[in-house]
Image 1 (cartoon, rainbow, N blue to C red):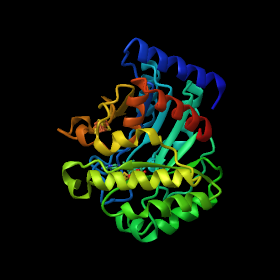
Image 2: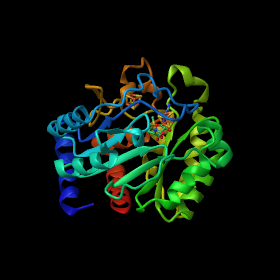
Image 3: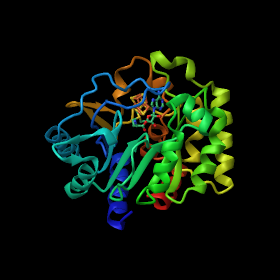
Image 4: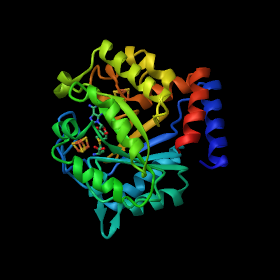
Length: 300
Ligand SMILES: C[S@@+](CC[C@H](N)C(=O)[O-])C[C@H]1O[C@@H](n2cnc3c(N)ncnc32)[C@H](O)[C@@H]1O
Ligand code: SF4
Ligand code: SF4
């Protein structure tokens, strides 16, 4: 990360905490909800299956920038399915950088070839070893591994959503990350139980066991892009929600925190680590601030 970006984020954090501000810094553009997969735990794919046109996506990027967002994520659906009039996802990433976003990340299922060296991080969903990943995501593991090996940069971070089907595969994902030259880290989330996937939710005891294991892996030197000091809050869902510093825009609609904000009762069961990490950071918890600086300087 550039020193100027780091100083900007420190200034934003100080202002947010001291003046109790609710301005956003992290924004997500949903480029499409179309997806080539139908993962067992996912409730947001192929609801409209519309691939949003370039002019609309570009305007949404500008809208987020004008709101103060400087960390941009492209998400879906499957982001690599996005194209319009000869423009590809890579063009969006390049244009986002030119627009002034300081960090530009992409979230993908990894089933398409990965040639995106301009992205700061490519969060690539890997939900276990071959058996458990394929149980959740269909027969995709081998294709993903091939794409990871052939990627043109080492900016990949595995992204695992831990649920009832793959809670025993945390170590395997960490070991795969360590073994792959193009993979920088692993980032975790707990399953967020939308009404149609409630059966995949983890109990408090199960979340506690997962955090113990992730903590142990961190101590062993596994590259985990999460904050250990946020774990107790994640286990018991005691972090503040929603995260006012995060916004998402989909088809012209801006939502605070996530598009899941409209699902009644979901925030109290939120499993997204970024929400805990950001809300605790901006509430000024010293341990979290220290760990954020250490972790972000290492992986971004
Ligand atoms: C909705 S997907 C979109 C991007 C891309 N298709 C992918 O799979 O990475 C973004 C991330 O959300 C995760 N996800 C989906 N449903 C979830 C849920 N209910 N709880 C937690 N994470 C979830 C996915 O596993 C994936 O890592
Ligand atoms: S690949 Fe991503 S968007 Fe598609 S179904 Fe799976 S989690 Fe959902
Ligand atoms: S806090 Fe609520 S809106 Fe934010 S990600 Fe969690 S469930 Fe979604």
